[in-house]
Amino acid sequence: MIAKRMDARPPVSLVMAIPDHPWTKATRDAAAVRIAMTVAEAGKREGVLLEVVRESGLDTDAPEVVLSEAAGKLHADLSAGVNVTSVQKLRANSGICHDGVKLHGSGFITTELEATALGLGRREGLETFVRPYRNGRDLAARSRKLLVIDLFGMDESEVRRRFPEIYQHLLQTVRSARREQVERSHTADAEAYLSQWWVFGKPRPELRPALVGLPNYIATVDTAAHRVFQFLPTEVVCDDKVVLIASDEQSHLGILSSAIHVTWATRLGGWLGMGNDSVYVKTKTFDPFLFPDATPEQRRIIGDLAEELDATRKEVLGEHGDLTLTGLYNLREKLKKGEAFTPAEQDARTRGRVDIIAELHDRIDDAVADAYGWPRDLSDEEIVGRLVALNAERHREEQAGTVRWLRPDYQIPRAGLTQLPVAARPEQIEALLPDAKARKPAFPRDAIGQTAAVLDELRGGGALSAADIARRYAQGLKVERRIGATLEALARLGHLVVEGGGYRLRKAA
Image (cartoon, rainbow, N blue to C red; front, top):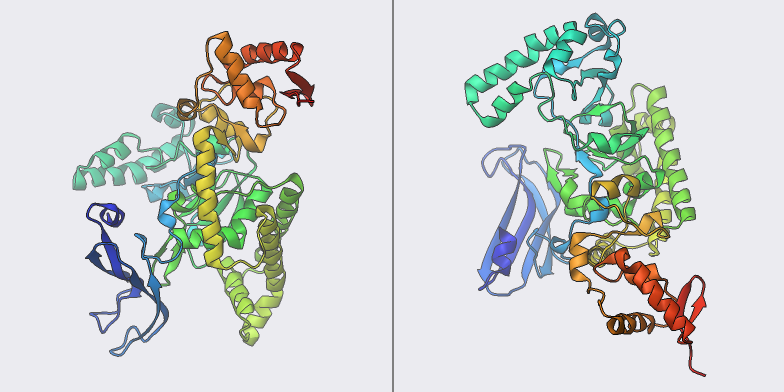
């Protein structure tokens, strides 16, 4: 809404903005909420951005809130400096990032002992549908080691015949609760949930094919004090407080864990809760994020470091039942700031290998910066600025038909693409997309026009194959044979020379 008004005619401008301010007792009461404040005026004007740098005593009659001040053009997301509101979703990331499931029924959750009583280990095939379950707290703190009954893909009668104990349990718990919800609300959603009462309310059917064939996926808690990414086995079901990235690529874990991506996610995401924790918003953070066009060696270095980081954290948490992932990263923050540790913190620091975790993050940050071809000491504002510029560049590439798919084997068939250039790198495959075709010129139908078009394409000086030229036209590889015949004819006439599997114009003597 703000963006529309700022771009309207006549426009309005923000002349003052406080994007994140605590609600204090002096205001009314000390509710655990945050607010934003803005002042707008007609016309194109600069403004003042006020940001909280220190706050204390919020539940007293004399709270202290210290603000910093910066002047300049204010944007619709209540920021100054780099305008991140212009970023576009990238097709390269499509279909990869998803929210976890939403149960709509606590009866789906069970313990191992309860699951045994419901037929686990006795009813053939039930182990496929009773799976480990994790929510955000399980990942950030300690896992409760709960299981969940996930019957997605089964119809009601099949559940009743194959797993009668499970069916009886869900009848008594989930179906009765959903019936009560329908009687209270009479909403279309509640009625839909009741019609499929043995299945999660939001089973995420769009996520499931993305996980097929993967041993692991990447997960992050959507609202967290620290933006941490980790591998989870594919058999683990996460709830909707967890964001899942359907990739088992170690370099992807490293890139997402890097300061470059975390800075981006913090700036483009949101803030929530009493701790004012960052929120990982899939559409705002992952979808427009551009992964570096890394070399195989760079991906190997990043992946090895990410694998070691993930293994180190899992080993520490497995060995020490009193440590948590959030606790480890609280200590890492103290280490980065050079703050003193209490004796108890020093003990946790040593047992938790916090210095090793910090060092691995530093090395990942350096390796990812190298993959982008950037200096290693960029400020947060410089990182965001470069990513915004690269997002625009990648979006233009995709509009022209080139998509740097994250998982080409999965994403290309999903996009409905069947015809792909054989010689293209998997990381940078030209997608023959309908919108890209519409923006490309049509290859001429007449012989004279075809000859002129081919010669024009070769005037850049490089050697091109028939497939290279065909991709530049709306018909794509359908005209490759025609272009090949034209190239051969021009070569026979002495206008072209064959070079490295392609053709180039013969240089004048």
